[in-house]
Length: 227
Image 1: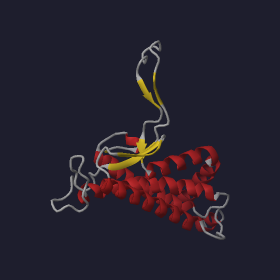
Image 2: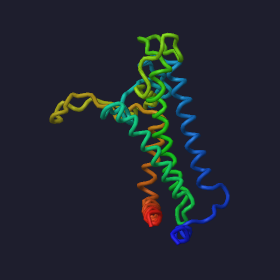
Image 3: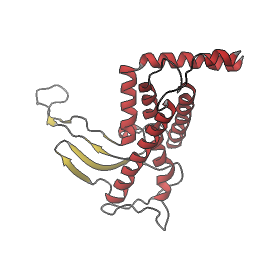
Image 4: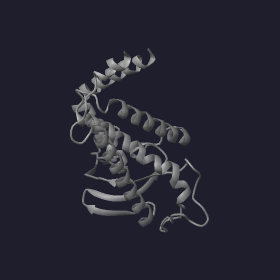
């Protein structure tokens, strides 16, 4: 009986199924993210930048933390937390991918967030082992004969997308910050970070109702599984 109640919430997908759409997005984002990171890592020395336009640069930096270069929490805790989060997102996608009344745009949002979290996991897990860390202006070598710069799960995340839209010095008469330099959007990030931010933004502004439907249906299914 529990299975019959659960099945009433689902439909057979037509056309490209939500599951395949999610898989394509996740693999596409991860491949694009890692391709760009590997190119930057093996083509730029740490701190090198390449101006593309007046407001966009490729600037190679690394960080131990979360999105946009923020450094929070212990490294191993952060890495395993990412792995756990990706596992939960994949489980969530598998449970809700064929729910009726759920728009595919919601699946796209969850897939983007999942892909973004997974993209940075590769850096953390593998990069410390497969890359060395030479002093600039030397460029990192992949699979160096003397080994990597760190151990498994201790790699640093590669960032490179930099959009210095504008900058200025605050007028001297402004209290507390007068005369100080200010740069709008000084963050440097990667494609994985972008996928997370786009997914979260779309989710908040356009698919909050779908999230509510998904969580309600998921809660019923979980309760049915325990009956």
